[in-house]
Image (tube, rainbow, N blue to C red; front, side):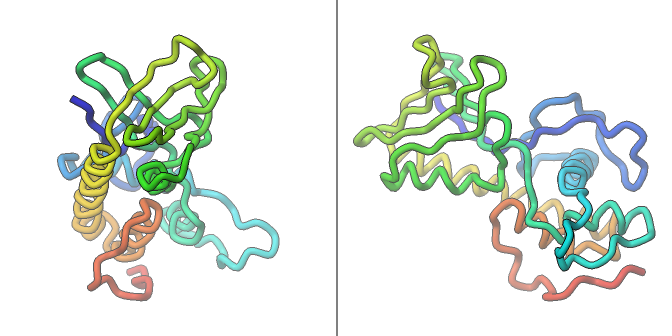
Length: 222
């Protein structure tokens, strides 16, 4: 059986106290609707941390707020977000795993549809664990081949029908939507002055449409 899950690369946020987080080891956290509130907190922390960057000269992002919470969230709420991670594919029959390499982000997950729709080859970052080559997915007729290190003759390979890839992508999108469904109530409890803005930012980061009833402007801080 082949499975596909959206994952975020996380670590335990030592010394972080703006909201509760879980004690996740460094690794990949599956984003779906089964996360605990503390795991949601860890994911939101990581998303904010990844995008906690100062404006470049000429960028119109506004000044970084003076308060610690507003300052930490500023990048997430004002930049085009980066999400380290991707779609993690496992073939349980063979034990083969296909995972995105470094320099690839979960925000690019919709590129997988290019493969399903016959767009040729899509590369997924670099693989620092072998030769630094880029993992890739390629459509070959009615099959899709996932290769972790294309220039390595012993590289792990997963092959699956195109229709199966489409089914897996639909499941991965449901997982991301379910995760986003946890973010809003979590943010309403933990970040009441920023709940709508954070939810919109994470929807944007994950290439998901925000809920239709989301307000169009950021909520003022209390």
